[in-house]
Length: 108
Image 1 (cartoon, rainbow, N blue to C red):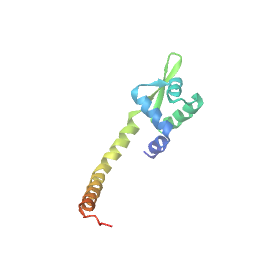
Image 2 (image 1 turned 60 degrees about the vertical axis):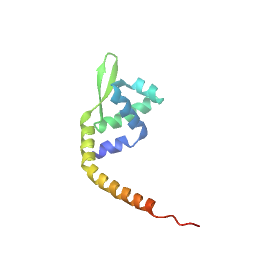
Image 3 (image 1 turned 30 degrees about the horizontal axis):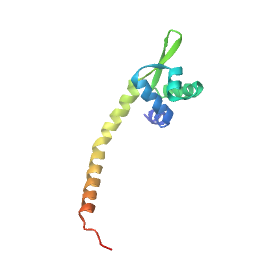
Image 4 (image 1 turned 60 degrees about the horizontal axis):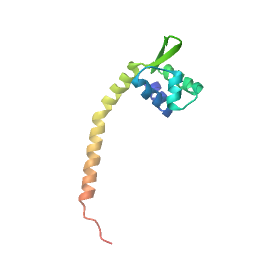
């Protein structure tokens, strides 16, 4: 899962994952949509592939890149385990904000 976070921490790689969530795409199309050079996109795709987030398959004269679901499922599972503690912390923050807002303001 740390490889997933590391790979997604770079903004262009996150944008590539967002694009591939629409449908599989070739490097050239990803590069054009993100306004990056093809070698840059290829490097980002290599990092995403090493993290297990993308894979490729041949399609005529091209290679289409597509998302791999399993690392994203693992990330979702991890986030689900954290959500209850987030809710508790947000409830405490909400109570504190309500308390601050309820106090009378000092007049200068």
